[in-house]
Length: 79
Image 1 (cartoon, rainbow, N blue to C red):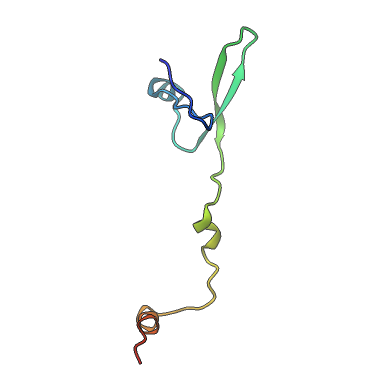
Image 2: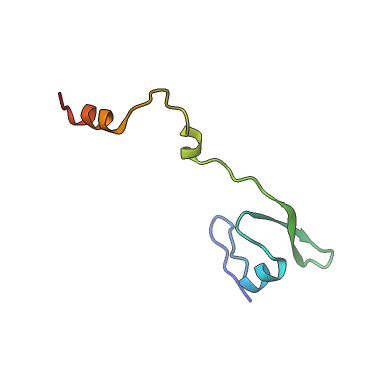
């Protein structure tokens, strides 16, 4: 089965290969090139850590504890 590479160098691993390797989202894969020039895809024995996104980095940084009704009153300008 052929697959097309994106400009970022990404390819989709075909479903029958993912099933054969029992790959799940978040699993790591390793690519090796054999002496014959064939590419071998191996499942890494552990899950690779997910990189934190901008929301993960901001989570838990607020120091002010607002109640919802107090915050809404402040935002609406209720006196």
